[in-house]
Image (cartoon, rainbow, N blue to C red):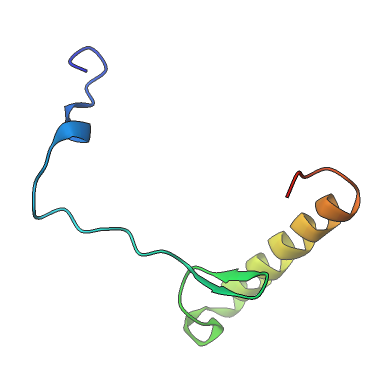
Length: 64
C-alpha cells in the first residue's frame, strides 16, 4: 500500500461522496440523467458510441 501510494483505499472518511449510478433506460445508459441535460455534441457522441457497441454486439465482438 505504501509503495503504491494507494492508502486512500482503506481511508474510511465520512466526507467522501458516493459516485451516483447511471440511469438505465432499457438498453440505453444515460450517465448524465436525461438527454435534455446534454449538449448537441454530447448527444452525437453518445449516439456514435451506442451504435458502435451495437455494431460490435451484432458482429460477435462483445460478450454481453
